[in-house]
Length: 309
Image 1 (cartoon, helix red, strand yellow):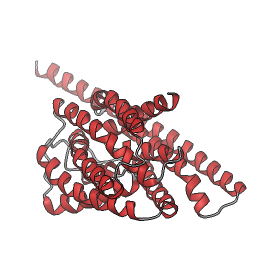
Image 2 (cartoon, one colour):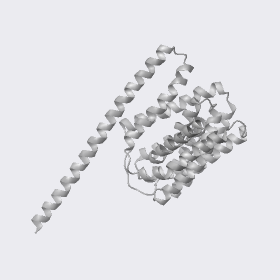
Image 3 (cartoon, one colour):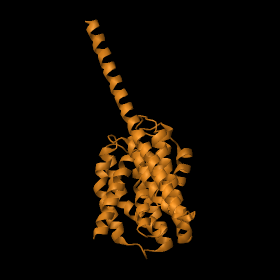
């Protein structure tokens, strides 16, 4: 019972991050399921089955708040589904011994990308509520994002959300809401791929249900937080957690000694702590500068009105 409550808490936290940052449910949940002892294919299958319900709840919440561009959902989600089915098939065919370090490497790379992206080059801010991107851009993005998502147990958000935000042509709330909504198609296709190749044998539906309950509870809160939470700090924090939890598998795969692994963990933890502090300082400095500019503009406008009288 305690394990299921813990998994529900994991689902809640993962969906809170995913719904407000546009990424994180799959990579966070899969990493923890791997630590719990599940094989990569079963961990990814469990997460994608749980994501089906969480995606619906998240999509509805974002839609109600006006965060969804349905044209973007279709053009991104359909190729994403094709890539996810191919990725699930690929992961189901390789051995567990090979799959674990491969998945850890993918998750670690995604975590590194998230951490560095939000620490050093946060996504550009745009205000367009409809995405101007066409199929030539969105189809390859969807295919790549879907394949990485299924093979890594997560990755749709890190690939799709960060790419669209990097382009700086669509409002962040629209990007996050649309990517979260299109993820239902990706999760559905990945789940079908795992069921076709593995069947339901070995999938613990209690794990799926616990993750789903937690995700459903967090979805409306995350949709509300999307325009209020400091994304830079959360991005650095989430990226670091993903890296830290996958280092053990990577160290074992490279056959590092116990002392070398401890040094590696300690070095990364120190760097991560410095990046969090630095990012928080930069965020606060930017916030104060923006507030100061707003006050100056308001004073100038008030002075101009006084002179006009």
